[in-house]
Structures are given as structure tokens and as C-alpha cells.
Image (cartoon, helix red, strand yellow):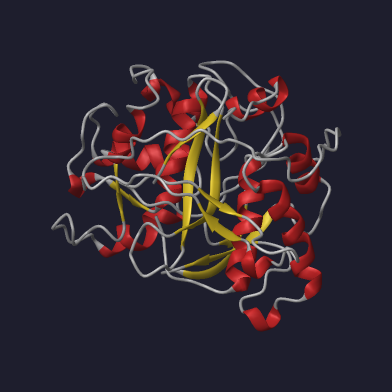
Length: 343
């Protein structure tokens, strides 16, 4: 089956760093990293621990790290924490006691940042997966996709038990933002986001259904850009409401320059753009998509999973590559390259 292909403008867009993934002044830390994309997930795995992995690793995670590490929104700040705790090269496996305590989004963001730094188009995807258990529950999850050479593959990094149509709608918005290189925290919200199914109106549901058609399987680049940049209800606002699991809700103003040029290849400056994400689990491997499952394209049925072999090695990062094969376009390309002040 043919693999999904990226047009030159889409490849350039995803090869450029976002405001969230840019290592900024810490880019020299990437200097000696391997060029093999298949090795990099293991490297990221050796620098981080998921905040639910304390018990499997026999490690009592300090409360301040458990509560605060995953609130680190930008990759340069994540790197700063990593090297403050252990100044060893990023290629060296860090002791579990010194690792950054994050969630799947953080694993995926680090991986994506390194790939982009090397000039490899990469993006974060958000959705749901059923491979974390055997009860059929679909857990909120984030993966990192990359082009190899021109078809997106994936390597994962986890999160969990919230459910309901409203949560599916949230993940759909997060996924669209991530496709536009606005990789916020998983619990960042903006616009009219309900917190229960009772508050999910048809007015809120309709744009989510439209997004789910665009983000299923092969993603038309122009359509994803246009939906995000030209829809005030979907586009990430400069100030978001962060619903931090441990620290409670707070208003957060995102860094300026989400639409300004950000670094792409080593030392190279790229053009405008920005995007956003949701959750991944280290040591596993499938792809997930928020996709409609019935003819009414209701958001309540927009979770779908793809199956892929998972890793049983607790310490080993994901090592499986998938290629996307578009069965058919979900929405015709608009042909428009929308622009806005932020994105």
C-alpha cells in the first residue's frame, strides 16, 4: 500500500521547531546525538520517567517533582531541569532518581525536538489507545510522528483515565493544535471547552466533528492549517486555562513569538508556524486517531485506535515504526495557506 507523502511546504513546516519544542540556547546539547531516528526514543526514555512509573522502577518520586515537572511547558526548560539534575551527556543513561518526571507529551516533545533539530519533519499527535490494558478502555495518549523518508512513522511515549464525549472533544482540539506546532500541556484549555457531557452542546460538537474528518489517517496539510488558523473557537489563545492535575487551575500566558520564525536545522532559522498536544505512554507503540466511527460524525464516536506491537521491556523506549497509508482523503485540501498573528 502507498505511504502518505508530505508536500514540500508541509515537510518544511514540520521540520521547523515550534515555540514549545525549540531548545533555544541549549541546542548545543544535541551536537553529539545519533542521527538514527530509531535510536532516539531510547535516548529520550533514558532521560525521563513517567510520573506513574515510580512503583515499577522501585523509586519513590519526590512530591515536588511528581507535581511540578510535567507542568514544564517548553522543551528548553525541560532540558534545563534534566542537566541540572545530571550534567552527563544526553546520550548517557541517567539514574532513575535524576530523571525528569513527565507524561507522554514530554517524551514525545523531546523526541520531536531532536528530530526537527536534525532537519527531520516531525509532529505530535493526540488521541486514544487501547493497548495499556485488556479491558477495552481507550486511554488518552500522545505519540510523535516523523518522516522516514517521506512517510510519517511513529514512536510513542502515556496518560490516563478521563472519559466521556467532552474529553474526546478536548483531545481533538489538542490534536489539531499539535498538527499546527502548538504543543501545549495536555491539560491546557482555551475557548468554549466543557468539562462534562451535559455541557457539550451541538455548537461545540460541530467544529470537533469537522476536525475529526481532517485529522483521521492522512492529514491534508492546508486543510489542517486553515481549520486552525481561521477558526477562533479552535485556535489556541495566547492565554490558556491550565487545569494542572496537582496544582489546580491557573491562567497562563504563552510565550510570545508563536508565529515568529523558530529554529529548524542546526543553527538555521525557519519560517512562521506553531502547534499543540495530549498524552503518551513509554515502552509502547501504536498510533491513535480521533476519528468518527459513524455516519453522523458525532464527536462521541471520534476515538479510534490503530494496533501495533508493544514493547514489554520496561526500560526500553518504543522502537516500532509505522507508515500511514491513506485509504481516502477525509477532506479536500482547501489550497489556502492561512496566516494569523500567532500562527
